[in-house]
Image (cartoon, rainbow, N blue to C red):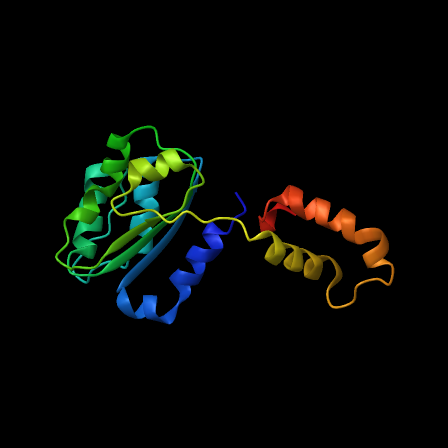
Length: 178
Protein backbone atom coordinates (compact mmCIF):
# COMPACT_ATOMS: atom_id res chain seq x y z
CA UNK A 1 0.00 0.00 0.00
CA UNK A 2 1.02 3.57 -0.66
CA UNK A 3 3.28 2.96 -3.64
CA UNK A 4 0.92 4.88 -5.97
CA UNK A 5 -1.13 2.24 -7.79
CA UNK A 6 -4.38 4.21 -7.64
CA UNK A 7 -2.69 7.53 -8.39
CA UNK A 8 -0.90 6.05 -11.41
CA UNK A 9 -4.14 4.47 -12.64
CA UNK A 10 -6.07 7.75 -12.16
CA UNK A 11 -3.44 9.50 -14.26
CA UNK A 12 -3.97 6.99 -17.08
CA UNK A 13 -7.77 7.06 -16.69
CA UNK A 14 -7.97 10.87 -16.86
CA UNK A 15 -5.57 11.26 -19.79
CA UNK A 16 -7.23 12.74 -22.87
CA UNK A 17 -5.90 9.96 -25.10
CA UNK A 18 -7.63 7.39 -22.88
CA UNK A 19 -10.90 9.30 -23.08
CA UNK A 20 -10.60 9.45 -26.88
CA UNK A 21 -9.88 5.70 -27.15
CA UNK A 22 -12.74 4.36 -25.00
CA UNK A 23 -16.42 5.08 -25.57
CA UNK A 24 -17.32 3.94 -22.04
CA UNK A 25 -15.16 4.39 -18.96
CA UNK A 26 -16.07 3.00 -15.53
CA UNK A 27 -14.19 3.29 -12.23
CA UNK A 28 -15.20 1.11 -9.27
CA UNK A 29 -13.38 1.04 -5.94
CA UNK A 30 -13.58 -2.54 -4.70
CA UNK A 31 -11.48 -2.83 -1.48
CA UNK A 32 -12.50 -5.73 0.77
CA UNK A 33 -16.02 -6.18 -0.60
CA UNK A 34 -15.64 -8.41 -3.67
CA UNK A 35 -19.31 -9.18 -4.11
CA UNK A 36 -20.05 -10.12 -7.73
CA UNK A 37 -23.69 -9.00 -7.60
CA UNK A 38 -22.89 -5.65 -5.97
CA UNK A 39 -19.97 -4.96 -8.32
CA UNK A 40 -22.09 -5.88 -11.34
CA UNK A 41 -24.80 -3.45 -10.19
CA UNK A 42 -22.23 -0.68 -9.65
CA UNK A 43 -20.70 -1.21 -13.07
CA UNK A 44 -24.09 -1.31 -14.79
CA UNK A 45 -25.10 1.95 -13.10
CA UNK A 46 -22.05 3.65 -14.63
CA UNK A 47 -22.74 2.56 -18.21
CA UNK A 48 -25.19 4.71 -20.20
CA UNK A 49 -28.38 2.88 -21.15
CA UNK A 50 -29.14 2.18 -24.80
CA UNK A 51 -31.99 4.09 -26.48
CA UNK A 52 -34.32 1.10 -26.70
CA UNK A 53 -33.52 -0.33 -23.27
CA UNK A 54 -36.25 -0.72 -20.70
CA UNK A 55 -35.06 0.20 -17.22
CA UNK A 56 -35.18 -2.68 -14.77
CA UNK A 57 -34.58 -2.87 -11.08
CA UNK A 58 -33.36 -6.35 -10.29
CA UNK A 59 -30.91 -8.30 -8.18
CA UNK A 60 -30.84 -11.12 -10.70
CA UNK A 61 -27.18 -11.46 -11.71
CA UNK A 62 -27.97 -12.97 -15.11
CA UNK A 63 -30.28 -10.08 -16.08
CA UNK A 64 -27.77 -7.50 -14.84
CA UNK A 65 -24.98 -9.11 -16.84
CA UNK A 66 -27.15 -9.28 -19.97
CA UNK A 67 -27.84 -5.55 -19.57
CA UNK A 68 -24.10 -4.83 -19.33
CA UNK A 69 -23.37 -6.98 -22.38
CA UNK A 70 -26.13 -5.21 -24.36
CA UNK A 71 -24.94 -1.74 -23.38
CA UNK A 72 -21.33 -2.53 -24.28
CA UNK A 73 -22.03 -4.67 -27.36
CA UNK A 74 -20.56 -2.24 -29.90
CA UNK A 75 -18.56 0.02 -27.60
CA UNK A 76 -14.90 -0.04 -26.64
CA UNK A 77 -14.73 0.16 -22.85
CA UNK A 78 -12.32 0.61 -19.98
CA UNK A 79 -13.36 -0.83 -16.63
CA UNK A 80 -11.11 -0.02 -13.66
CA UNK A 81 -11.49 -2.20 -10.58
CA UNK A 82 -9.41 -0.34 -8.03
CA UNK A 83 -7.85 -1.65 -4.83
CA UNK A 84 -9.04 -5.26 -4.81
CA UNK A 85 -8.17 -6.87 -1.48
CA UNK A 86 -9.78 -10.25 -1.96
CA UNK A 87 -11.47 -12.49 -4.45
CA UNK A 88 -12.27 -15.92 -3.10
CA UNK A 89 -11.86 -17.91 -6.30
CA UNK A 90 -11.02 -17.82 -9.96
CA UNK A 91 -14.64 -18.84 -10.66
CA UNK A 92 -15.87 -15.74 -8.84
CA UNK A 93 -13.50 -13.61 -10.96
CA UNK A 94 -14.68 -15.28 -14.19
CA UNK A 95 -18.30 -14.72 -13.19
CA UNK A 96 -17.68 -10.99 -12.80
CA UNK A 97 -15.94 -10.86 -16.20
CA UNK A 98 -18.64 -12.80 -18.08
CA UNK A 99 -20.56 -9.84 -19.59
CA UNK A 100 -17.36 -8.18 -20.86
CA UNK A 101 -16.50 -11.06 -23.18
CA UNK A 102 -19.58 -10.68 -25.38
CA UNK A 103 -18.89 -7.41 -27.23
CA UNK A 104 -17.98 -6.77 -30.86
CA UNK A 105 -15.61 -3.84 -30.27
CA UNK A 106 -11.90 -4.64 -30.17
CA UNK A 107 -9.47 -2.95 -27.78
CA UNK A 108 -11.54 -2.96 -24.60
CA UNK A 109 -9.74 -3.32 -21.29
CA UNK A 110 -10.30 -4.21 -17.68
CA UNK A 111 -7.61 -2.75 -15.43
CA UNK A 112 -7.18 -3.98 -11.87
CA UNK A 113 -5.15 -2.55 -9.00
CA UNK A 114 -4.24 -4.68 -6.01
CA UNK A 115 -1.49 -4.85 -3.45
CA UNK A 116 -1.61 -8.65 -3.41
CA UNK A 117 0.58 -10.45 -5.98
CA UNK A 118 -1.47 -13.64 -5.59
CA UNK A 119 -4.62 -11.82 -6.76
CA UNK A 120 -2.75 -10.20 -9.64
CA UNK A 121 -1.55 -13.63 -10.80
CA UNK A 122 -5.05 -15.08 -10.59
CA UNK A 123 -6.65 -12.18 -12.49
CA UNK A 124 -4.06 -11.49 -15.13
CA UNK A 125 -4.42 -12.02 -18.83
CA UNK A 126 -1.39 -9.87 -19.70
CA UNK A 127 1.80 -9.19 -17.78
CA UNK A 128 1.21 -7.18 -14.64
CA UNK A 129 3.04 -3.97 -13.79
CA UNK A 130 4.50 -4.02 -10.31
CA UNK A 131 5.21 -0.54 -8.96
CA UNK A 132 8.24 -0.10 -6.73
CA UNK A 133 9.08 2.58 -4.20
CA UNK A 134 11.23 5.53 -5.21
CA UNK A 135 15.01 5.19 -5.32
CA UNK A 136 16.53 6.22 -1.97
CA UNK A 137 18.10 9.52 -3.15
CA UNK A 138 14.96 10.55 -5.04
CA UNK A 139 12.81 9.62 -2.08
CA UNK A 140 15.02 11.57 0.32
CA UNK A 141 14.77 14.69 -1.87
CA UNK A 142 10.98 14.25 -1.99
CA UNK A 143 10.89 13.66 1.78
CA UNK A 144 12.86 16.87 2.46
CA UNK A 145 10.60 18.88 0.16
CA UNK A 146 7.48 17.58 1.95
CA UNK A 147 8.91 18.34 5.38
CA UNK A 148 10.57 21.69 4.78
CA UNK A 149 9.37 23.04 1.45
CA UNK A 150 11.99 25.39 0.04
CA UNK A 151 13.25 26.60 3.44
CA UNK A 152 15.37 24.19 5.44
CA UNK A 153 16.19 25.32 9.00
CA UNK A 154 19.70 26.65 9.62
CA UNK A 155 20.69 23.79 11.88
CA UNK A 156 19.29 21.16 9.50
CA UNK A 157 22.58 19.74 8.20
CA UNK A 158 24.09 19.50 11.68
CA UNK A 159 21.24 18.20 13.80
CA UNK A 160 18.43 16.93 11.64
CA UNK A 161 19.87 15.46 8.43
CA UNK A 162 20.85 12.14 10.05
CA UNK A 163 17.44 11.79 11.65
CA UNK A 164 15.71 12.65 8.37
CA UNK A 165 17.77 10.04 6.47
CA UNK A 166 16.94 7.44 9.12
CA UNK A 167 13.21 8.15 8.87
CA UNK A 168 13.32 8.17 5.06
CA UNK A 169 15.16 4.84 5.10
CA UNK A 170 12.45 3.25 7.25
CA UNK A 171 9.79 4.40 4.77
CA UNK A 172 11.52 2.36 2.02
CA UNK A 173 10.68 4.73 -0.82
CA UNK A 174 6.89 4.73 -0.35
CA UNK A 175 5.58 8.32 -0.45
CA UNK A 176 2.25 7.59 1.27
CA UNK A 177 3.96 5.91 4.20
CA UNK A 178 4.49 9.30 5.83
